[in-house]
Length: 93
Image (cartoon, rainbow, N blue to C red; front, side, top):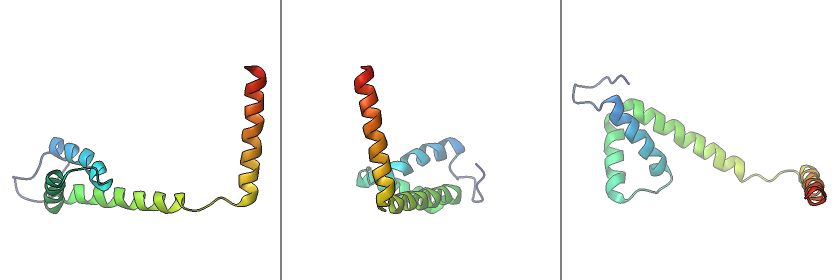
């Protein structure tokens, strides 16, 4: 990872560790001390901040998509197909 700041910038190995923590940070699964460390890193590391923004955007789009209900005709077709598969499994089992 290339950084545009001074020589005290985090190494690519450190950034890789932070990127793993960012997933937990986005899901509110870190304690406050760890959140502070991740926030401080994001404040000083543009490449990680960009990846954080991308992950946050993807998470928001997925969450929005998951809240939409399928059309009734599609739901009925899926449920019908599930019942067919269940019957097949029962007969074969």
